[in-house]
Length: 207
Ligand SMILES: CC(C)(COP(=O)(O)OP(=O)(O)OC[C@H]1O[C@@H](n2cnc3c(N)ncnc32)[C@H](O)[C@@H]1OP(=O)(O)O)[C@@H](O)C(=O)NCCC(=O)NCCS
Image (cartoon, rainbow, N blue to C red; front, top):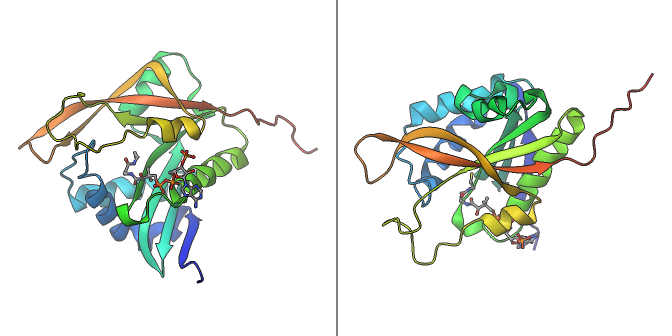
């Protein structure tokens, strides 16, 4: 049977037509533990527009017969918000050498078929093609082990991320605010950064 799944990368204005569907997908998937995010479409659409405007940002989209079933984002760290950049600048890191992975979201029924792995490959290939990044990073929310909304069968993504070549940093943490589905107002969350050093970094420029 022919596979109906297509995975394609988009940059700039070509993304415009997909923003509402990706916004809805993010809202749906991020309601799950550990994000527990009570989102608003208005905020989501504004958030995603940054990926149209930021130079060299990328969104990888998975389609099944034309329907969006997953998406994954990335942008150069220099275009990120101050709370994300702050821990890196405080450490004296060169922001222009860091590429930041925003998120990966995939409908549950499509998981475990290699689509998430392809999201990581396509974003890494994009960062490598820009030929100036030494570090890939993303951050993940920190939740208490005994959080009341943690499902009994929850499997952390740590091993999946390790297998993609990322390691949890010792102390790089930022703060993000959102409303949890079981709360009535926004609260601040700790987000822990994960890091992968890019080994292939060519300084050769054609004459
Ligand atoms: C993170 C997420 C996108 C991963 O997507 P996924 O498509 O299920 O992941 P994959 O199927 O690519 O990989 C899972 C494992 O299955 C393996 N796999 C299964 N079928 C495969 C196939 N056909 N081809 C390649 N790998 C396959 C992968 O190799 C991987 O195992 P490994 O880590 O031992 O290498 C998905 O779990 C998700 O949307 N989670 C909720 C949102 C979230 O928490 N996002 C992360 C924070 S932003």
